[in-house]
Amino acid sequence: MKVLHVSAECYPIAKIGGLADVVGALPKYQKNQGVESSVIMPFYDNKFTNSNHFESIYDSELLLGGISHSFSVLKLQDTDVLDIDVFFIDVPDLLYKDFVYSYDDTDRFLAFQIAFLDWLLTLNKQPSIIHCHDHHTGLVPFMLQESLKYKNLKDIPVVLTIHNAQYQGWFSHDKVSYIPPFDFEKVGLLDWGGVINPLAAGIKCAWAVTTVSPSYMEELQHAANGLESLLSDEKDKCVGILNGIDDEVWNPETDEFIVKNYSARNVHVGRQENKDWLCKEFGLDNEKPLFAFIGRLVGEKGADLLPQAIEIGLESNDINVLVLGSGHKEIEEQLDNLKNKYAGSYNAFIGYDEKLSHIIYASADFLLMPSRVEPCGLNQLYALRYGTVPIVRRVGGLKDTVIDIGDGGFGICHNETSVHDIVFSIERATQFYKKTTAFKKVKKVMMDIDHSWNASAKKYLKLYKSLN
Ligand code: ADP
Ligand code: GLC
Image (cartoon, rainbow, N blue to C red; front, top):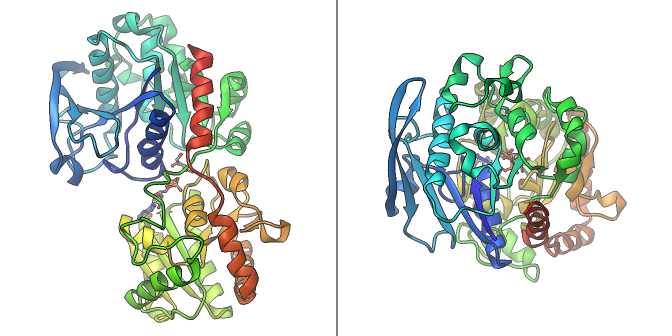
């Protein structure tokens, strides 16, 4: 079986969030299970593309709103990077930028999808499955089904994974002519609520739709940013498959980013060495419990509540807090402003830093995830793997992966994304930290859980087989 993943992100090539981690890991695990898996993504101007080698395998042109854009398909030559084939769509004037997402994403990702299908038409051997990820690739199922140009590809089963239904890629009907010609009676397949909605079109036209946790699949029936009734109508072809983690990248025994490697056997000593380094670096007290937040500073993650919750938490408990993230300017500023007031027990790195994130997972005692929406969430899985107790709101994938210590589990859970619940959880955690034996025991328990992709890759394989 030959599976081609189509995505805007893939770790370590280009990463904004968890989408990259999934697309950088699942294909590797599929390969280990005998599936010939590869990835196709845009060619960005970044550190990775500037320091690796690529072979040009196809050149052509595409039309977008009457304007012609030349494009090439490139293949990554350094095969050791991911251990699978990675292809790139290079549209120099649209995609080759030093960012992944921008204001003109409609044109950029339309070009990506059209160039991809144009190239696919020229291949002798087609994939047995096309696996699309998120709205950036959501028009592929429609174009395969309806665009006259691609009628020879019509029989390839296409799976769409929704990583986050908050973002749908909406654009106005005046750009419908950018999509290669189709029977105009079918324009309704592209429309949702009077605009072109790539995610909705993908849900309608894909052969199967997956989301990244079973609970999120259920939640989408009631809360899908306007797509509730569509997801409810299409529920027979939808399934929730929990994300896994890349056990090779996220392994405290071998992780090259962290200060001291460790396993469940020497978790306390190993983690303390990482924590000592981190606390020194950020001017924190290594004897106090360390609470961390890593992520996008947006409402979905509950980040708008962090400044107030952190302030109350610091006032009423003897703790440290460290934030790593970027996003809304207002939240960034508020989190930055706390630095002076709580110097010595609070710090923040506003920005993106992959290495620092690994060190935090290896050091922090608790990881805060008060998400309003969390389709899966990978941070809590990395935290578990590294022995950091996750503090999560019971939502989406967080609900599916974290069991509260009060229920015999290894995390701290709360029901609402509210300052009250976050502060209360910080207090519970602080008390738990003092129960040294129980706190130490729980680390070993959570580090032993297998959250690798092995089990979920099998579920995807079963799904693919049901479509072939
Ligand atoms: P989402 O994709 O919604 O942002 P996930 O939990 O699925 O959330 O994945 C987030 C990924 O991005 C994780 O690998 C996390 O460690 C990483 N990450 C998020 N923000 C930062 C940051 N500021 N610096 C480094 N890594 C980050
Ligand atoms: C999205 C979701 C996140 C999920 C990730 C990978 O970014 O917000 O919850 O873990 O995709 O599937």
